[in-house]
Length: 234
Image 1 (cartoon, rainbow, N blue to C red):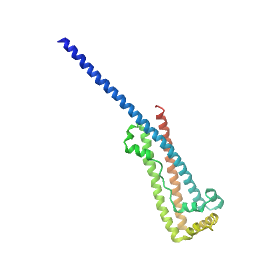
Image 2: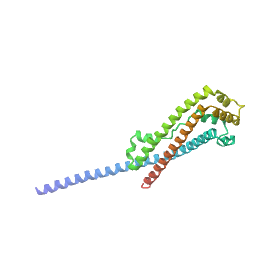
Image 3: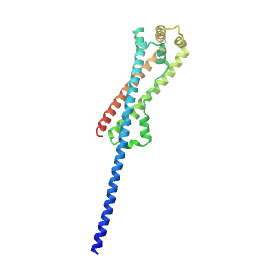
Image 4: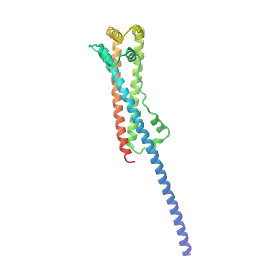
């Protein structure tokens, strides 16, 4: 009886150990796969950070040029040469008046991470928090500002088409140089307080939008630092 008990006990122990080893090997395999996916997700985020940095750098330059141009047109000291330092094209000046600049940074990788459920592979709570803040709060604030700017542009276009169609005609007239167009625009602004007040409000939104973009860039740098810190562990 004791002999059989020992025999079956050993067999049972072997079975239990076999199952335990199998579970252990499976856990190792799962962990390796998760680490592989985690590294893939982190590297995708790193690649997208570089793409967003290039995009925001270009946007910052254009938005600053917009502010500078409005400052020249609304300022008391008007110099044609100063405007030509920002642009040599009257179509660019017109663009600033009637078009708005959207904000669409490259976010395909982030969207894919969310949609495929790969967000779960990110272990760092800090990275999750900064990533979410960047693509929700910071992004949403800029988009809201852009939408307000769009509404202002629509109102501005209405003012120009109704009260100052000569500005549109001049912009399409090849006989009008950027110097002549800039002088006409400055003169029109000074004579029409409604037009001028709308441009002043527009300029304030430019400055607000730039401030929000600065915060967005700061959060992007924060994310990059946290990401590099995490990747050093692999």
